[in-house]
Length: 243
Image (cartoon, rainbow, N blue to C red; front, side):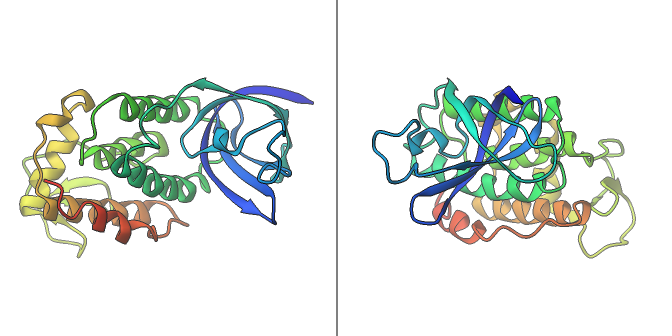
């Protein structure tokens, strides 16, 4: 049976000499993997490999295996063109990092979740259509938790700590992973600030790195199979001079 669905490319990797496997999060069927035979060797083939760049937004017609396995794409076209993400070294570095995070997250969130799809689509288009902001990835990661079940409890923000173990603010020291001090100030600002006001958020590079580490710990606590992204070192190196 063929199905048609909007899809977001999460990642693609080479398989053999000329094939590609692409992982997409689809609006109607959740996470799906597709086998693209010979796409890397044929210049006259049905699809070009550029169509399956990370964070491209597509409309797909494909078969649909209900169990895990590779599907095959009958038709694919761009739904909304991506204009800047793949041309900017800063934006493309963010994309590589967030793609790795999403691959880990979606291992546990494979099923259909239209709210999650809509969030990802909105964030990618916002990122593509606006000037680069070095705090975007932090806002993305924090807001993503709304759709995967562990968004912070925002009550009691007057307390001096945030406890990632239970996702709430605390007035007792009961964990080595507590967010406190100037890190907590930055964390609260991220919680309160809407994305369209992100240019008003001023964080030093050191605080930004520490907040990213806090968020990765938060994810690892609440997602059983989450692994620390390998790309984070390169990510931090690229943004080491960003203010």
